[in-house]
Length: 86
Image (cartoon, rainbow, N blue to C red; front, side):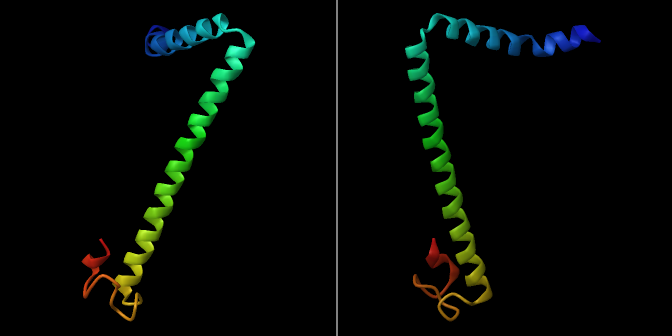
């Protein structure tokens, strides 16, 4: 039972060990710089995901309104039908 458990998590343990060994070779200033860089990259990635989500939500709202006939009195700005929004 435990042999299978060890096999499944052996790759994870190797990755963790490798990362910890790499951390031990960095001095404090270098570590702070690398971690700060990772935080900045993560913040930018999260901001892009949030922007994409917001655009999707706005698009879905426009589509919903168009399907209900509530967008510009049943017509959207792009033409006579729903496809003008795309």
